[in-house]
Length: 459
Image (cartoon, rainbow, N blue to C red; front, top):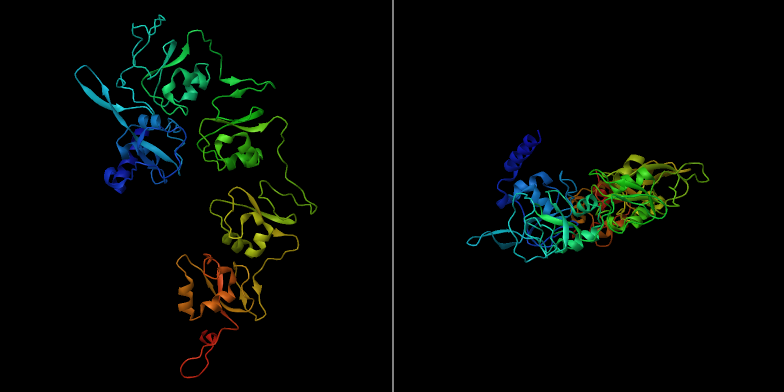
């Protein structure tokens, strides 16, 4: 079934994209942040803009999924963790590799390695050649640079990663990379189909599936670097997990989550699938929804500075905009911003998964009716004239010039009626209503000597 689906995807891809070499972009330098652990010896990069699923990358670039995972170990065996907004390696640099005494072929080299290594072979039993005079039989092929006093080996399978191998054999990641130095500090040089060292003479393995710190709580493995040592509750990351989902489920403020799991990053850009993260520490208790003096329970999480007398809340979704909130709740942006100052004066920080205030005690949201008897639509930008006779809803293609030309008004009048757009028309917000005819337009004096008011053009 899986092969059928992949085949179908491949046909659809071919039909819509054509030849990969002609239509798919590959660059010798990444233009996005590099995915964690990616090989440092990359010749070509793919900037993941979300247009291709992970399963089609091997088809698009004529490579194997095993190579893709080996060069980008943050990608799981099931093609998880292929995060949009990151650059992934789709071709490693090539070096000549001796195959026999008379022939030479090319194969992909590991990061930071110029050593000539044998090409991939079928797993073999250890050879009869002793290395370093220690009497231990060493298999072939091996990871380049392996220590000479190794007495236990592991054959790396496609999809393996350094954390999984070290945990399986009861050693630390530091030991594993010390005995196999060509792995690199980020373990980006782990080859598939070679033998690696998992024990040396005189070393006794200790279980590392979990560690037990001084307060008696076992830590699962693998974990990301730098996790707090006082953690007492853990969560295993799945392909659907997000920082916001963790925050909501555990009632855990993101600032605490980031401080306990610094490798995740301050913007949750490195939440690695199949790794454990800390969701509670010794002595910490989850905050409870607050009940202010108005007797109304405030949900969590909320952004900082939200008004204390809120009586109605809205949870932000990925499709939510300030304009949609204003339209739905019939509130002005001035009020919405005053109740939720953390969103910013230009509504640039409307955080998904957070609750915002959309109503306060004593507030009666409704379209405003100015002194001239004309109802003002919502939303509008702050400071719009209160004596407007006619309105226009801004579209993505609207400009100040197009409004001036269509309504035959001057920019001076348009700016006077709508000061929030800015003196250079840099803040004309889509889906907001602006005033295009006020009650005191600037008169013009044509050549016939008759003064004409702009207002006379309104029908």
